[in-house]
Amino acid sequence: MFTTRPEIAGTFGVVATTHWIASAVGMAVLERGGNAFDAAVAAAFTLNLAEPHLNGPGGDAPIILHDARSGRQRVICGQGVAPQAATPAHFAGLGLDLIPATGLLPAVVPGAFDAWMLLLRDWGTWELADVLAYAIGYAEAGIPIVPRISATIEGVRPLFETEWKSSAAVYLPGGQVPAPGSLFARPALAATWRRLLAEAVGASREARIEAARGAFYRGFVAEAVDRFFRTEEVLDVTGKHHRGLLAASDFAAWEATVEDPARYDYHGHTVLKCGVWSQGPVLLQQLALLAGFDIGAMDPTGAEFVHTVVECAKLAYADREGWYGEPRFTDVPLATLLSETYNAERRRLVGRDASLALRPGTIDGRTPTVDLDAAAARAALLTRAPGAGEPTVARLGVIGADTCHIDAIDRWGNMVSATPSGGWLQSSPVIPELGFPMGTRGQMFWLQPGLAASLHPGARPRTTLSPSMALRDGKPWMSFGTPGGDQQDQWQTIFFLRMVHHNLNIQEAIDLPSFHSEHFTSSFWPRAARPGKLVIEGRFSDAVLAELQARGHRAEKGEDWSEGRLSAARIEAGQMHTGANPRGMQGYAVGR
Image (cartoon, rainbow, N blue to C red):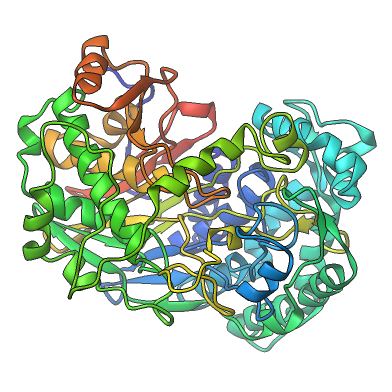
């Protein structure tokens, strides 16, 4: 079948990311003797420069890795936690029933930096200075601006010029939006990394990395954030000015952790995801439901395939809404959610016609609370409420924010899947001394008590970031993932099914037209839902659209190339293969 580009094959190493420069940097590290872990870290810091509207140093980074030496797969949790001062009572005192999407109030401890340092220290081989050299070089000399960065900055230019002056100083050099194709430098960020390296001293490589962690979380980085959050009142999406809650003590109390991945066996494959502090297991739940259908007999671009996958996604995402959250504060019965007994019962809810209900399962007599009607009513906020809708949304920073992804495999068989995000240029003001903003993932907490994802000081927000890895017959097979918020584990499920059941290669599965549902509650402010809404790419036939509508889906066509930004890398029959998404014209896969 036709593909937009070849599936890359090789025996030395492969790297795929959401930006061609980051992919090239990762491959350069492999060529210079680094392993997949070194390559992923170098690519990640490069993405801070190449896609600042999609990720930044103040963001988050969940990572799944396969270590060829030990034969083990591990998850590094790079999702930071809520500040100790972030309580429901504090937000109630401000008159808020949702945590805003922008400004300082939704900031959590930035988890990405520590996650990358942990990966580099325990599994990498390179010095931090060598890994950071690529990003520092681009920060000082400039990196080519893609059109979407310029458009994002233009969208929030009035906000930067009138309110977030520290962001204007970085992203409006000379008072102008950087033009597409121009070189854009980040001297303040380069200075931050150089200062951090100057403080990263020690007798060994590991000690130097530990010193860098200390400088970030217990030194000048944490102190600069603390000062800014204590002294500045910042305009956010509420239309009011608020101070932040993040403090240096929150930085010092947190560090990235390592844990076992969640797992599900499906048709000879074992799929690995991050835990229930993320939405990751919702992909496993979809597979557990779909295991009862003959997916291989369905046309992968036909109405029956789309309908079956979407109806199972609705059930799985209803459980995500009802059950998932920080396991230190809520009991998530994941073993039951993935059990055949539970899924056999849930599978009976999938009929010929689309459901317009949000139906979490009942477990041990407990049925979690979900309010689809309220979420549907909040959808109106995006167009009607003060401080929302275009062009006000752009003025207050709530414009399209997404994510990045990295896949890497080296010649020793090490494998990485990582989905860095957050710290978006458009959602929080730059900390002047550092040259980058904090992340705003706190908007994913609920302020109502008693819900699985309710706000607790020191809790992780139930992140949408969701890298994936799969074993085939017990051996490491594929790393994959995508940006896309709530859609990440819809697009990845579709991609995986097409590879497993329809024998497509990576590039073929990426290029086929995809789809997503907006039926369930969004993880992002204003926590809206659009019951029954289904968006399919324009390349689907009109007959498929008509059939889906006849089954009760509120289906519509999007642009021809609009669904997903997947990339993946796999090992098979002694070769490595990789592919990347052509949508958006930024993702790239390289290898030899």
